[in-house]
Amino acid sequence: MPQVLRFVVRRVGRALLTLWFAATVTFLLLRLLPGDPALAVASPNMTPEARHTLLQQYGLDESLLAQYGKYLWQLLHGNLGISFSQQVPVTTVLMERLPWTLLLTVSSLLVTVAVGIPLGVLAATRPRGFLDRLVQVGGVVGQSLFVPSVGIFLLFMLGLQLHWLPIGGAYSPGVYGFAWYGDVLQHLVLPCFSLVLVQLGSYVLTLRSTLIESLGEDYCVLAQAKGLPNRKVVWKHALRNALLPTTTLVGLQLGFLVGGAVLTETVFAYPGIGRGIYEAVTRLDFPVLQGAFVLLAATVVLANVLTDLAYGLLDPRVRTT
Amino acid sequence: MTATPASAVAGLETVTTDQVTAARATWSAFRRNPLGVASLGILAVLVLVGVCAPLIADSPSGYGEQVLQAPSGAHWFGTDNLGRDIFAEVLWGARLSIVIAALSSALAILIGVLVAVLGAYFPKTDMVIGTVVDLCLSLPVLPLMILVAALAGPSLVTVVLVIAFFSWPEVTRVVRSQALSVVRLPYMDAARLTGGSHVWIIRKHLLPAVAPVIVVSVVLTASRAVLSAAGLAFLGLGDPNSWSWGRILYEAEQSGAMSSAWWTTLFPSLAMLALVVSATLISIAYNDARNPRTRED
Image (cartoon, rainbow over all chains, first blue to last red; front, side):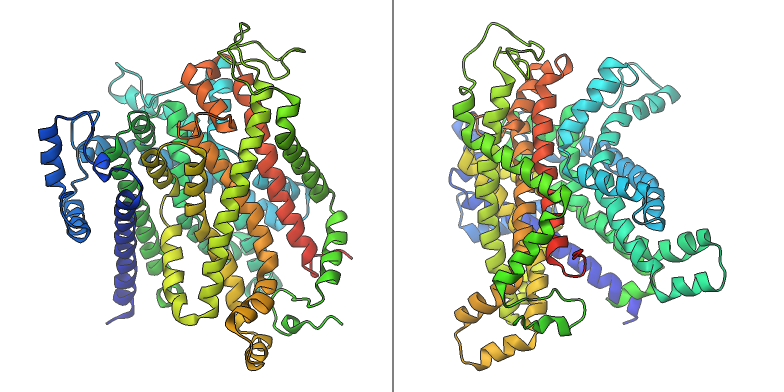
């Protein structure tokens, strides 16, 4: 098998393994927790007949192994159950919300990278300088922030006091056409900015340390020795290699980012999956909670596979590891 | 006196066998780091405040008539939408946050270290453990915690168990990588040759070598537990019978007080930030102090 193909197969295989693991963990948790597993699929408020049919449909009257098989089978068909509170399939509920969560997380990642790279470069090129100290302190504080606190602070200052930006939701009713996009963008600013503030710290700190490391390596010393301008050594030679581990780290932290998005959406009443989770918690809508976790896990895994594959195609060294 | 088998291998932490000397050297280096000492002071004050909360203020339970008062001499941090004193809420919240952080990180460390050490010491199990840890770390943990906490019902025990159960993989990841490099050192072979039991080798030789990493992980896991507990409480999944910083924010959000009364959210947020930042700075200062290469002596 050619090397590239083997690499692709291995990465996709690992992604499938992760998905299977997530599904199995959910299944085991729901069955092994003290309490009635039927609670997870059937509302106690249902009529006994409806409840019985639903339990049968999920095979909750069968053995654990048979239940597990059925559960995976349903999952493969995209069947995540019926929402208690809305009486529609969980998949429908969540798929309406997924685009908003994707918009929020992807935009916050892009802004983090766009702001983080120049900051990291500035800090790494003058280590122990004033800006470097500032970046280090800011990085530690940023990592320690509680997402809702940041969200509430921004909402209070920029939304309620200064009236610069809308304070909640993802769009205003009654706005159509081209204006709608501008409106969506305006609503995106505060939640996106909250997530950026929380993520930026660890991104800049990692980039800074890997960049300092690559600047000390032989090929950078050589680039300097042959008289390349400093700017070129940093941006063309050192940064390219430093970005690799940094971006891998971003991939690994996607799970945390999703957690942050859940809390941010709650603060801003942003109609994504996170707000859906919050609403499901208040209504004890277990199928939605379970489906949200499975869907978010799948999204994270897919994002990781895509970045991994993109990497492998761009950087031949990755393929062999 | 200080035989350092690790110093021969480049890139490894120095293992000092004379532990008293090593600890003293680390402490004297730590003391010279102003940020580290200040953080230790802040953490000590927060813990003291948490322990002494019942002595300083009554548990905020009754409904007062002074609703949503701004901070004043009578109510230092103002009052919430039901007229309860936020200063008292923050104090009692410190108590609960510290209890949750201590219990859940203790449990997570126990599981995490055990799994990591066993994996490193018995290479046959390491493949499985490494894969499971990688898989756990790549999943979105908060939605999973929410699902379990909602199913099990919100209580202190649930919160502690849920956080511990989803935090140990991070501990294992950090401790395992250190343990794996220690297991390969010659002195471990020597320990095996003396015919000691596995338990003795792990307890006397492997654990002391990874202890510094464990110390750092205790601090980081505890501070992350504070944030996770606050996250759960903010979604209404905290213990409804006791005050936590997350619950203060949750109630401010639910009642809409957060949009008019900044003091309802600012003070619990600052307390949380102070706790987590000081814990992080302590772990950084400790790391610098115990590493002879970054130690400035």
